[in-house]
Image (cartoon, rainbow, N blue to C red):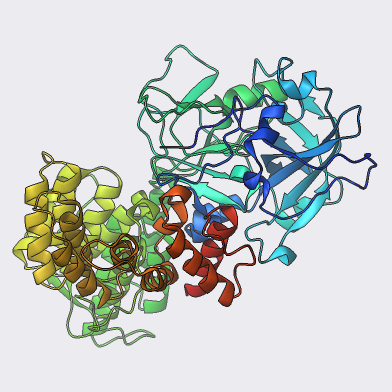
Length: 632
């Protein structure tokens, strides 16, 4: 289930009762608040559900995000508020805040002014001090983070019943150190549209949610105030900006939880950013790009520049042009064609790039501007290699066996949900148009299309890849049938495609085929066969296969239980990038296996807690940090 939150998403943590002075508020980097007991939270009238790390909780460390999300997240910080009552008892609450120009932060007004009927108010607690923590991405790297003093009260705040938004000024000059968010925003939303949220859920290190993060299908068309969404959040996510995934423009300010695992109509809530801006007199910038595509003016600029470059004899200038106008596919192909003319003619300019241009029958221009020119390789073709590598980087399967140099030398993208779909579609389309015989780029193009739910197009590309004998395309077709993407869901057909691809050498298919046998999905349950296919995938260092084989030894499926072996396998999968162990519910772990895992994390220097088999935030954070230290 997704995180069940309190009425609002601020995190409250009771600290020991002490007489409050300005200096005694315990502002610190530690990610310990979600370990607090339900009783502490119940004192404040919240739901007492402090355990939110369950099997479907999907926020991921910001440092695992792509470059554009990491860049956006730089201006996001954690707002720590210290509260005191008449008895001198204090506690710290946490929200997420965005640094704006003028050393101001934007967050929810309820972060310092909760509803009047909340127990925090009736118990007599008042906010007495606040800090802004910037750059907090790991408890193991506190030197990269910095605290700034927030001036209370807010300089501008809206009533909670209205925009639930507030602006605070910050002492010092955080803008100099961290920049500021330019508040590029759009008011239009579409039900089902993919979203992203960067936040400090539970007050822990900075995370982002993108998996299952979307505009809820049910919206009030008459509402100019609220957006319903399905992004995984947590107490502490209050004040986070809601972003459109395609271009990272802001659409809302998250402020209230409401998702329930047993109700598909339930949703979290955000205030439309236009409503917030009007309430607080914030200037919003209009986006220069929409839905991940370049503006017409940008490609008009390419047309103007190309008119003076079409007869250039400088390959360097042509390559620079391609880099600057990468999304204007007409002109990219013209520039590549011109480089080919230089390479095959008497004047090679200032570069010895070898490109062969083969004329093709004219074709009708499609929406992306096909021009009837196909570029094909003549030996090692630097231009085509570059296009293929760009596609690899945008949507690549890390274990595709058909690589240009015969080895898996590119890292690729492990999780499809991490793909920047609009950019990947454009990048891989260019690679396929330039080299239709490069089956790897074709499969990655299909993967990018599937990431954007353009399933009919993805299926057509996969059918071509399968006809070309590609194992990874065959495996991906199995996934399309498994989830019913563009086809009727059919587990037996999915298993058939996985089996064919596994026998062709696809490690992903071997892993997934093993899962079918482990769960008896589409095939008869058979633990021995499942184990054999997991071991096959491990031979390729496929990350998920380590965790799946670990489950077999952890639970004794067809083998004797072996917590030592299971812990070793979990560690290997985590080191290769598998995230599932960190999102698994604490109660699902076998205690003996969890203890062995804690020992290994301790031995590696990432865990200092008790070796008790209780997988809580301390163990989870240690796994995240171990993974970050292990990945290149």
